[in-house]
Image (cartoon, rainbow, N blue to C red; front, side):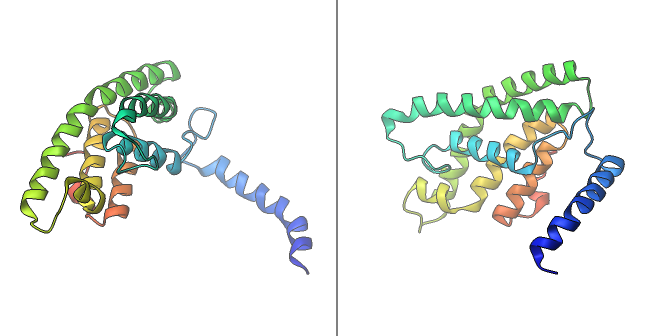
Amino acid sequence: MPFYQWINNHLPHIVEDLDSCIEQKTDMENRGHMGMAGRDAIFQVLDNLLAILFPGCFGKEFLTRDEVRFFLQDKIRQVSLHFLKQLKFAYRYEYSEEEAARQAEKTLIHLIEQLPQIRNILEKDIVSASEGDPAAHSLDEIILSYPFIEAVATHRIAHILYAEKVPIIPWLMSERAHSHTGIINQDINPTR
């Protein structure tokens, strides 16, 4: 049987079986909808948060010094729009829809307020790495090429979310850092 004929005949039944399995057995059911948009949405938020912490090093934008403030305001607004939705969905695992929305807003405000502090701490780590590596020619070189920067930045973001009792998301971020950097999960566990 040719593929197109097979798919036309069999796909409706396969989809029906999958849907039935998901409906009956999924742990992702979240009060009448499937919950979060998925890992990629969280990873995109994380990438944007890293771009906010290190404009021009993480992310896709080439920036001049004059554009940084505009970029930061635009990117923080953009991230906030998307991340607020994800936080609301995550908090629904623990709270009513109304309380989840309140917790999500509170957490997002707290995270945004902590970004300058996270950046300052990371900058000290970067300077220490530069001083400890005579082959490093610039701080940008360290930010762009040392995997610990992404791992530690992700850990600091995830830890704030963990402290705010956000379900699922801190662990997704930590696992992403592990898979991107190779730094073992124990070193970037969001509970520490």
